[in-house]
Image (cartoon, rainbow, N blue to C red):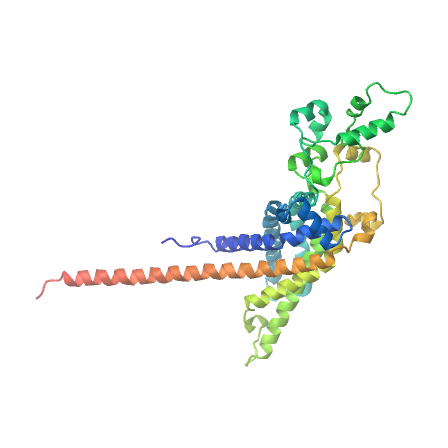
Length: 403
């Protein structure tokens, strides 16, 4: 019988963290999909569900689940890992292991910044997959036909099938100009601004594959929405850990009041039960989601905006200035989104609270299972050692000659 996870304590906590993150991500992803699709356009929850079911069916609720799990594994690991490192630095040299609320908030802000940098590319791909789940699938043409008819399109947006009706409409509008071009359609195909035939950039649902994102928008597009995302994660991390520390301290204080004699240090009041800690994490997630929801909406709408490379280059050459006031420019909020920043706040609060509760509860449950397996291993090893020792003693006693 092999020892579970060897002698590494870190391996046990890492395995518990992976299991907890995966469980929480899978459990709340349908609500995340409904919230993400509803924040892009003004629709009620019932309308979003009906549209998603008609376009993708029940499987559409889990669109982008792979990107979500891949993003949360390093993101949440970095969040809690950075927080533990910073709080260990704060507690170094103190008589007790107490962390103040301000220290917990500062550590949470730093942890949120690290999490945002790691999660942004995965969140962009996840969000565009979720938005694409409410749109019906388009009929696809052979790739060689698109490559011959639209050579520039096949280079900047591989695999995209243009709508010929839109192209014909644009050509009919421009055909009234004088003098007429002998090959209006062929001339328009040479301009990247006419990729879709209407002069508008492609929809985010058409640019959800990493190869398309990189080919059309460049590598920097993977971190689009980093500014509002970092603001969101910093606010979320600061509010989450400070609220969690406040509730944790309150529960320890309540336990210490009923103890006789009174403990000299707060940590001597005993550890908080896993269920109580999970409830505290869930409530902290609700508070943090309410405080950071406006930046979450701004990030989602920013990531669903397709900005091709040629438009970004044009903006740089023209020294285009970002619209909005100082706060909006620094946090990445678009002035056009001012009236929709609080859209879907209730859904996100419920999702964040349940995800935080399930994350902490699953982590403690898996850790307890590892501890039980470890105790069983050591108990069986102890019994085997005693049995072997008794057998050896019996054999040595039987081999002695009588005097």
